[in-house]
Image (cartoon, rainbow, N blue to C red; front, side, top):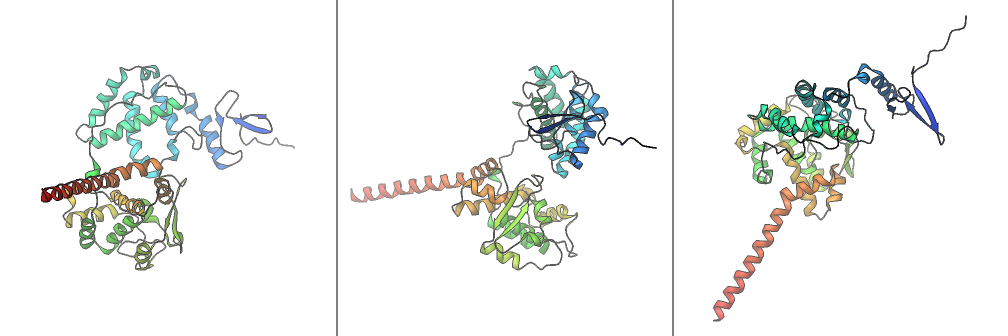
Length: 355
């Protein structure tokens, strides 16, 4: 007895235009952007056909759910699934808070200026921890940006709402003495991580997973975790970096290892903080990621443009420009002004001696 072959994507609606097929979850339904037949296509189709597709999109809570299910590579800004795993772990509880507080409100209220007052009131639940308050606002802002990109809101109501945490990190930089003090107080494994960060500009997560296979004679080449693999860092193998790498014993597949000679899986943060405290740097608010400025400064002093530095470190040019303004250019400007003042004083002294 003949059996009817089961369709792989029941309900899928496909149209062809100019030789290209366009797939939709159903007629007049959302488009499936992934390549047909791939696992990404199957996942995106299942998400579109899930009960979430029947949410009341007139309520804000529906858009929180839709943002969390937003597929990647849609060309409409950074989707939730494109965020780093650690970022999603931090954001998930706050998205739940957004859902609980704002979920029942009609979407139309978020296009009214008065909603800013409600957003400030909600954010101020964390007024005692300003960083958390600003992170909560950032998470809400990302949902609203998603809604703007989907044509639901005309503007993001979080824009223009001031941040609670104010910290000018241009005054908080790692000096050579700071780095030496840390390395003297830290275990050899933590000290190596700090030295390597200062020479490469890699983020902590990328450094801890850096494998020897990513190190070659000319460069360290690594797809960055923060970009979900969309950007690559290509750090030239210059003398100081080459010497440091040559001093590191190859005890595992990764360059950096813990005290047991194994790749870091956990515990680095606690070891890092303990080293800061032993070095007397715990009150300085020095962060691991501030070491990135040391590498960027080195490349800038060597004559690299901000575009070249961005290519080397796998950052955006905007981030490089901001970091250079924070750590380097202000000092250059001050040195130039000091030199001009000293020349002026020398000239006055010469004039005075003649008269």
